[in-house]
Every structure is written in C-alpha cells, then in structure tokens.
Image 1 (cartoon, protein in one colour):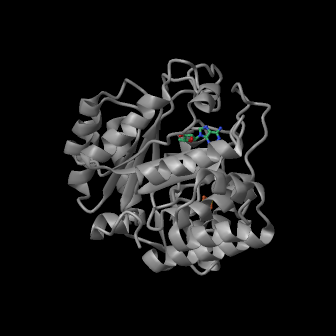
Image 2: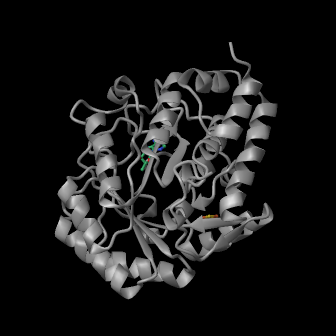
Length: 358
Ligand code: 5AD
Ligand code: FES
C-alpha cells in the first residue's frame, strides 16, 4: 500500500490522485499531514490570489422551496418554517446597499420557488446590472432547464452555484426523495458550463451516510467538471428535518478537504462557508488558512435572516450587513489577509490558464 507521505507529495506536485489514494489520504490523516497540506494549499492560493479574500454579498431572497431534501431546513415538508419572499424592489435595494458597502459580487440565493418566473429573474438581473455595471451577479436557485439558464445568462448573470451534493448516486438517494435525480443535477452543471457561466459545485462534509469513498468520488467529480468555484461546508443538523438526530460534520475534516481541493484545483474560488463559521467560532479564519479565499457574508434584510435557516444555530443572523463587513475585515486582517472590493473572477477564467492552472 502506498505511503500517505508519498500520496501527499504526489498531490502537491501533480494535483492528481486516484480514488484509492484519496481514500488512504483521508483514512490515515495525521495532524502533521493536515498542517503540511494546509501550508502548501494556502501558499498555492497566495500564488494566484495574493493575500486577498473576496467577498460575495448573499441575498437570500426566498425560503419557499418545492423540494424536500432530507437535510435542509427550508424543505417543503417543514411546516414550522416561516416562509418569506423579497420583492424585486427589495432585492435590488438590498443589492445597492451591498454595493455601497463595497460588494462587487451579489449572490441571489433561494429555494426552488416557481413564484419567481424566468422573466422576473431576468428583470431582477437586468436591474442590478444596469444600476451597477461593475457588479458580478451570481445565481443560486437550483435546477432549471437549459433554456432558463440561457435566459438568465443572456440577462447578464455571470455565475451560478449549484452544489452537486454527492457524486455517488446511491448516497444521493439517501439524502433526497426519489423525485430528485443526481444525473439531472450533474447535467445542469454541464449545461451551466456550456452556456458560459462561471460555475460552482460542491458538497457537504459529514452528511449522513457519507463514506470516504463517497468523498473521493466527489473530489474526482470536481476534478472532471473543473468548476470555477467550489462550495464545501460541514453538514449541520436542523431540528425540523429527517436528519435532526445526526451529528454535524467535523471541522478538522472540512479544513483538510479545503486544502486538498486547493491543491487539486489550484485556481478555484473556494469559500470559507457560513456553515464552517457555525461549527467553530474561528472556522472561517481557519478555512482561509487551509486554502480558502472567499467569504460570503449575509446581505439579506435583518427581518428575514433567521428565517433562511438551512441548519440550526447559523451565525450572523442578528447582524446588519455593515456590522458583518466590519467584523470580517477585522477577523481576516488578524490572520494577515485582506478583504478586497473586487469582482473576484477566477484567474483562469480571466487569463485562459490551462485546466490545472500550472
Ligand atoms: N447543513 C449544511 N449545509 C446545508 N445545506 C443545506 N442544508 C444544510 C445543512 N443542514 C447546503 C447544501 C445546499 C447549500 C445551499 O446549503 O449543500 O446546496
Ligand atoms: Fe457577521 Fe462577524 S461576519 S458578525
């Protein structure tokens, strides 16, 4: 069996690992290997992006959702969720407020909510782009047809986040009801790329029934898809879901995976997620030190923040966006990094670097 040290070295020098090698790297990790890979990963991030941390203003504009994912607090089956929708005017006001705070990427995230037709989304996107031409608009509104995605792109949307959730179809079936298809979800990701979106995929760490083999398949799927952005964060139970009694994903494994992902896809834009900040008070700082380079603070109006609860105890639901921005600048500064006012595009996307970014 290959030595874990050799596998770590191979990861650092080539960014390529086999499924078996990834499993060994996960199963036999030691504090030394974790620290070593975190150091290598953060220096790769610095090579491409310097000490910059990009911020994305997240507007959670609807918590209505037609889906019933077993892990998610806004699943349609959760009758305790207090539902809300922001009007197009509220959404564009929120975006302008974010612009004033320095955000140059606005993320519109919501449940899969048919109330917002393609036309409505198109108008919202066009309004934001007309008012702030230097802003990148990112959508995170789930699975749609090729035509809908194309319409959003033509309206001016730049990026799209759609986590694949798990690359293993058997595992996918344990996390979702039968009407949701992993093949369709992956097809959506390929469509987004084909249309020209900077595309983000990803998965939860420590989701119920997840194995190291599943994680290896997730990493290989990401390597094949070659997205511009990758979102990973720990699974955190929500009391009104099927998985209320499962334990949360581990901080240490999430950080280790951030480092491995940075080394496998050197130029990827990789957030230290809110979920990571929720399981540990300094989780987002540790994420950056492990190779992440993006933070996505909440821009949603204070009145609705607590209602967009995908999981329990979510942080920053009592803070105004301006307060979060100050807090983040301080936190990021304390570890030697700097929050920047910049669209923060993937460097490969801007310069046409090769797939591996080497
Ligand atoms: N814990 C952590 N992450 C979650 N997500 C949904 N529910 C949870 C949870 N309970 C993640 C999913 C989804 C993204 C928007 O949030 O991966 O794609
Ligand atoms: Fe929201 Fe610190 S980032 S309070």
